[in-house]
Structure formats: structure tokens, C-alpha cells
Amino acid sequence: MAYSELIKNFSKIREYMSQFYIYGFKSRNEYNAKSARSYDNERRRIESWLGDYMSFHQNSSGKNIFISVDSRNVFHNPLYNAFKAKSFTDNDIILHFYIFDILSRNTAKSIREIADVISSDYLSMFDDYQIDESTIRKKLKEYEKLGIIKSEKRGKELVFFRNEDNVDLKSWKDSVAFFSEEDPLGVIGSYILDKYDDATDYFTFKHHYILHALESEILYTIFQAVREHKATEIEVYSHKKSNIGVYKILPIKIYISTQGGRRYVMAYHYRFKKIIFYRLDSIKKILLKETENEYEKYYETAENVEKNLWGVSIGRNHNLDRIEMTLFVGDDEQYIVNRLNREKRCGEVFAIDKNHYKFTAEIYDAMEMMPWIRTFIGRITKLECSGKAVVDTFNADLAEMKRMYGDNDYAV
Image (cartoon, rainbow, N blue to C red; front, side, top):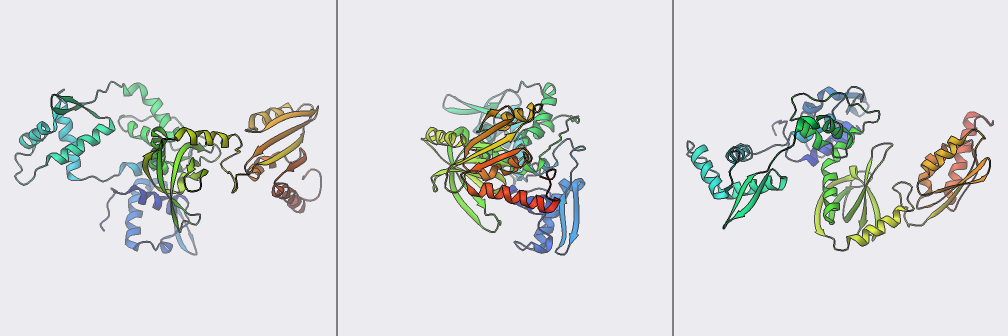
């Protein structure tokens, strides 16, 4: 296969970029899904978009290439370039210019009239090249779905005309630039930014989660399913990414981690008959299915589950853990109480006495709280949980700290 910068199937590119350039756990020698030539062609294609952001390291398995980006110096997510290299046919590019040239004269024309103009004004000099009406009809329907053109019935014919565009793009430039880097579907803003002659280059972010741009197509389809109350069929990687499971789910909400930017879909699983979470980067493919007539019922179920969620873990059996944590707070440490109230999520905080406060919660997976609980080490006077493993893990962590740093009050 000859190398080309353009692509037809973005899902394949997403898989390559994830495995080789983002997570960086595969080298060329470890790739056996296709030929070495296929790998080299994909590598050159990706590097044509991301050449300025590539780095590598050598290990026993070979050369591992990965993306290296300094967020202080990057104003626009470079991964958006992958979406802008989609291939097209001769008819795609020809009809794009012909149709908008014909409809730019503030006229409305039927498919038959558009076909006649193309044949007489554009293709008359080419004896061996013609475009049939069915091809033109498909292209018009595609643009109508995108909102670029409109159609209406005039008499017995359906006519098409250009959609009005009264947006002053210049006044929206800064907003679009911010949107393109901050919104979960920022790739849309990136496309709009391409219309400006001068880019806005003064938005930088301390926590810039650019890697999740590759999930944009998956996320867009999920948003569409939520808006239209539709079920979906998803293909999901296993933990080892060696097997793929196919499931039917009803997407309900999107959860986005503020700590790492990782994104999850909260959905009702038809086969398991319960609410479940899937990481978006584990979804290989998603297809819209039929409309769910009982959507409100499942949405209410999800809201009831949310009342006892700490993060995105529901546990295997959907059983609730009750956890109680008592903290010592000094006389001049009101900020600790403020933090508890700010970060308690589905829990409750109340004072026991002047210097002791108790945090309580009933959640599906108390083990998910462990990183947060550890941040209060040195203040915790009592920790109880119906899930015995939580307290055991906490005590084991303390024992390990004592072993490593010495058994003294300061270390604990």
C-alpha cells in the first residue's frame, strides 16, 4: 500500500496513536496485527501530523515512539490534525465546489436542475465524465444533515438552497479558541479556528488533557444518543486489549475526571440489567440503535445510583458500604472543616466537639475513597467501614509507612 497522509478509517488511526504514541507500550517489533509495511505507512502518516511533538526511547524490545508535549508552549491541541486528514473521492471534491457555486446565486434548485447545470456548465467539455442524479442526491442530503443547506417543497419538487450564515466569526474568535481546548468536543472549535487568518495564541492551561481528543467521535455519538434517547451497540476492549466484547447499552450521562481528564459514559446495560460505567478510551466502536421509549425510567434509576457514588465505581454487587471517619481539627484549622464540606460529595460532615469532626457516607465502593482518605493521615483518630478491606488496607498502608520511615509520630 502506498503511503498517503489521508485516511479513510479513523478508528484504525485512533488505535495506532493510542497504542504506539500515547501509551507507548508497543514497539515496531511487537506489532503483529498486520505487515511491517502497514505499520511503517501508519507511522509516517501520523508523524506527518505530529512530527514536531514526537520523541522516543530505546529498550530491550526495540524503539518506542511517543508524543511529548509541553503544555506551556502548545496553544492548540496537535491531535486535532488527525481528524483533518480524511480522504475523499473525486466526486466528493467536485460536487462540493459545483453545488455551492450553483447555490451561491441566491437561488433554490431541484436535484434535476442542479444535475442539468453541472452537466451543461461544468462537465460539457468532458465526454467521458458524468455524475448521475443519485450521487448528487446523496451529497445534497449529506450537506442538509450537516445544516449547510436546506430544502423545502415547492409544488411537486423538492428544492435546495444555501442555509443563511449571519454569524460574525471575527467577534467569536477568542471564545472559539478557548472552546477548542477546554470543551470535551473541542475539535469542532478547531475546525472553526481554521477559518481565521490569524490564530488566537494566548490561552494556555495548567492541566491540558489533550490525549482525550482521540475519543471525540465516540463522545459525539454518545451525546447524540443521549439527546435522542437512543440505545447503542458498543465494541469494548478487554483490560488486556486482546479481546473485544459487544454490548447494548443506553447512554445516560458523561463523567469527566477533573484530576486526569479521563472520561466515562454512565449507561444502563441491557444484558446485565444495571447501571454501569465504561471508559471512553476502551470503546473501539459505537453504533446508534433504536429509540428507547422508557428512557425516563432508566434515567431515574441512574439518578438514584448517583446519590451513593463517590467516583465511577459501583462494585460488583451494587451493595453499599458505610464509612465513618473521625478527624482532629485544631483551634485555628477551620480550613480543614471547609475542605471536608467542599469535598464531601455524597457524604455528611458534623461536629462531635470543638476539635473533632466526623465524616460519614454510604457509597457503592468505599475502596475508591482511599486516595482521598490518605490525605488526612495524621488527623484521623478513628476509621470504620462495613467493608473490612478498606480499614485493613488503610492500616496496612500505615504499617508500611512506619517500616519505611521509622516508628515516630512525625512520620505517621
